Length: 342
Ligand SMILES: [Zn+2]
Ligand SMILES: [Zn+2]
Image (cartoon, rainbow, N blue to C red; front, side, top):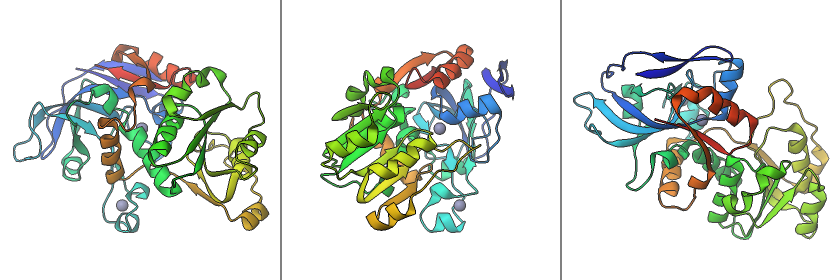
């Protein structure tokens, strides 16, 4: 079988290797599709330098069970499955308090840019291999992780009927945020981006009511104007920009919530924060990291039922041999979601 191996930053080779043996109590999945995650691009360019990143490239995958250990009653050969790569420890204080997405001892499973991947018993036992609902395509199933993280972000935001939700960043994640906010009852979604090319199809893909091109418009002024001077109840920063994180604080309504969904650049994560604005206007600021197993299952169901439409977000599909090109396409940001299909 073929497998992509990262030799060093920027040096990736497609290797010929043996199909993995079935782990005791686990199974082997024949990969059908594997989406490129932002973390794959990060690891490809700089090497695997953060504990929060999966150890090998490729984890947003769907496939078919090709061999299964006897006694693993849950699955049979031929089952269509999707992987949830984050296996929480289940024992630490975070896990015990119901926030397993923050577990520092999370086991992460990677190596999905390969014809086959071995899944250890612990992942099967903890529900990290999910049966794919009938009718769902392998392609669409690879978007489950991205949507699961969006579900977690919005769980922390508590979107209510009637809210105006401002999403900054019209990438795949921003579009998922727009669609989900609508499904949660937001009466208005405003989507902003600095890249007019990305905005072209964003209305259709995000369900947004209003698109703002922040390369040519003053975003804060426009958001105030659109909300009678009040600001948006919920503001989601779905990009990696400290300047935008700062600006978000000026656009949130009193008692509103701001989600720093995108991480800031590691080299300079500091921003200016007007604590008086926070004091007088009583707004909340929260981060958003990863997702729980419940949120992953929920995301899979939302995609399968068509509540959130992911197919139009898949703009590029490459074969494994062209993985480097796929990673570069993702890095350039010209497309939305980039997939490797087997
Ligand atoms: Zn991912
Ligand atoms: Zn834990």
